[in-house]
Length: 311
Image 1 (cartoon, helix red, strand yellow):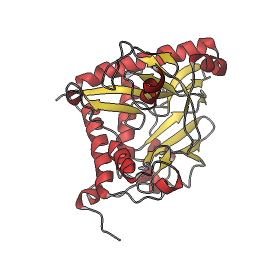
Image 2 (cartoon, helix red, strand yellow):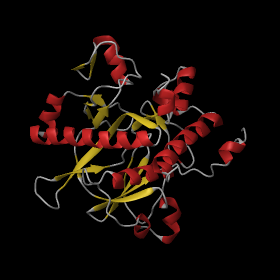
Image 3 (cartoon, one colour):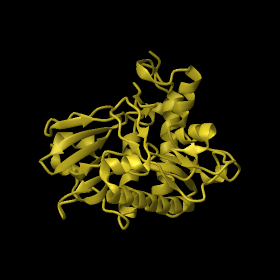
């Protein structure tokens, strides 16, 4: 077996799975391990697992979970004036045994248990990804007619809201129309979700620009907190505005008509070069060290730019 490169060794050990004996494990997602804390709280632990094309890779990215957690905590605080979030305000370390603290320190959130809405709230400021594929075929994005002549580097005049259904691990989220969203959660809640998601995106986008980053698109997850009223208060949950759920582009590159993404693009590029993009064959691949380090470096740059002090 090849020895890890010096750059990969410098990242330290990875946390691929957590094993907290003191709490019941509810689920393992693509990245997060979810534990029950009594009947009203959850412990969300961000592992270093790496996924692409809805497949979890065999190799993790050491330190990735800590970066994700730092960014999510930053955004929950920064955007709390727009919508409540699910953080309990209590330390995650307080609900695990002393010998388990190292598994959660810096990579966990202790949150309120909510009733999740059965949808993803996606906001797009640019036409990229699945939206670009649809646009080139039909001139629409998630069924919404778009102006002719757009490129992937053309900002939309106004961000658009394109909801999607939540998929199980290994499955793909499916874009749905606003009418389908209304059928899922009702008109009033759908309108509240749309307006809240767009406000969150606009506020985050404006801030990120001051840090040299363009947020091309992002997805939010919301739940209902029933502690104050029976119908439930719309509450931001899961994570928010990290490279796992957003496209972060360097503004300086975009100004030159180029896209330099601060996300898992090195992994996507490498997978494309292998011709393997999905399924068990992808999950079994051994990743080159430079791909793992490349992903970490882009996540770290995004975290530093967005969460760092004044430069």
